[in-house]
Amino acid sequence: MHTQPTSTTTVQDILANRMAQFKQTQSSSSSTALPQAYIPTEQKHTITIKPASKSWPDLLTALEPVLDADGLYRTCILRTVRALYDQGYGAELETAAELAIKLANKKPASHYFARSVSKRAGNWATKTLAKVHEVWEVRKNALEVIEKLKLDSKITNYILSLSWKYKNTIIRFLSIATEKGYGITNPAGYFFGIIKTAQATT
Image (cartoon, rainbow, N blue to C red; front, side, top):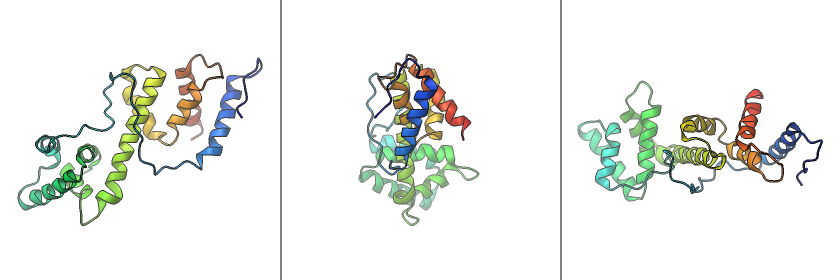
């Protein structure tokens, strides 16, 4: 049971109590579950959790930055990509391309993308899909924080970075900050206070 606030209960007491409860349940949480859909109440943010499915020609246009190979190599990549598209992975392929552009180091993004969809290496089933779903989960969490705390959309990038750093706890922090019955009048300030506390202990 939660400890109800009294006249002598401080914000620090409430936080300590809720953090203790969180630590007890953290170990039982699963990090392998696929992201659940979060439907925002207002469509005013720039975060796209999961891209809308595109037609094959439109998807090819979106993937062009990571398909800048030539000849037989390009043909092999396109064959693999088309097979995945036909299996219903159009949105996943688009996100995988975004990841390739952002995460490719010295090698071109096209090489990173080719490895991510490689049949021979088995990366699509074992690594790439997991990373894609993680991206969607982080975006969902960031949007949920922005929506529930009524934050300005200009803070989007900061919330996304927090959602990556605290991807296993960000929604629990949000739950603590918005839980009814504790008389929290400034949920946004309380939420960022929890983040600051977490940063100080890591």
